[in-house]
Picture 1 (tube, rainbow, N blue to C red):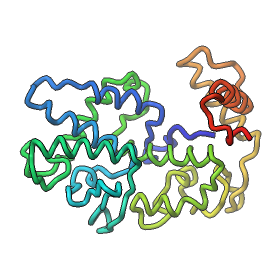
Picture 2 (picture 1 turned 90 degrees about the horizontal axis):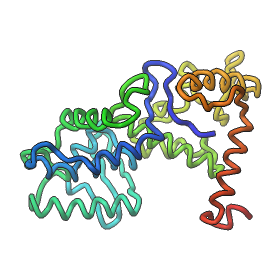
Picture 3 (picture 1 turned 135 degrees about the horizontal axis):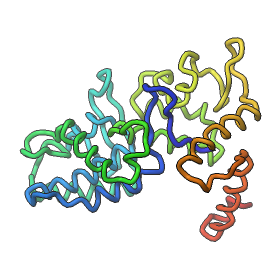
Picture 4 (picture 1 turned 90 degrees about the vertical axis):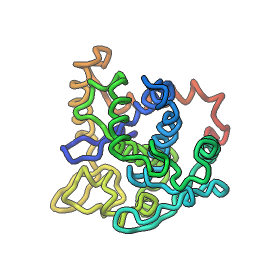
Amino acid sequence: MVIHGLRYHRNAPHSITGTTAELLSIVDTYAPPQLSFARLVPTYQVLLRLFYCCGLRLSEGCFLRRSCVDLIDGVLHILQSKGNKDRIVFMSRDVCHMCIVFDEYRDGIIPNRQWFFPGGKGDRPFEKTSLDRKFAQFWNKTAFTSRVDRKPTIQSLRHTFVVNKMNEWMEDDVDTGIMMPYLSRYLGHSSIAETQYLSIYHAAVPLKTNLLFFTIIKNSANAMSESNVERFMAKYANEARAQCISVPSKVHPYMFRRTRATQLLRHQNNKPKSQFG
């Protein structure tokens, strides 16, 4: 099962999984109305991808010093972040390469700069409010701007990173309960309890179970019954049908299983043989 977003109450983390490709495409093709602002476009392209690919907080990306970016080992040193905590964030090879190209570009404009993402004046970091406004402009250009219950923010890219990582673990049959402490440390949380991307479903109950989806009966976590899952799917299928008439009149969990099997068969030539062994 894949998580696409958590919106069960107004304080729930907001994920934009499934919409980021279009959003980043809009960022990549953005042409500022004033030519003098064209030099900021690479900053938008790289900084927003760092939020999405590394799960950084807004302030952590904007206030990232050049001395804290290790482009040899692919490591970001996040200093004095929320709760005055320091941590190390590892970048994938493609993200690190992206930062190397950006660093060379910016170094040609502002040699020996202090901030990895300098603002308009060069000697100051990129302003959070400015980036927030620009993100809102990019989002409003997507086809999804009128389809969400509330507008996402840059923090939504951090939430999307978490959702994507958990989806990846579930698809690889990795125990999410074991990995949660590592994810919590990577995000800079003080404890697992602060990483509420799963426990938001049961906010009043600490996450003390290996079950991914569960119900609470007599203060105890129990596996969610098949009938409950079917009822939830029927409810949201009815809501989706109002927007898309092609949704079947009856939706059953096994439809997702069969759909996934069909997708694997269609792409089997591109899959490593070990995954089918």
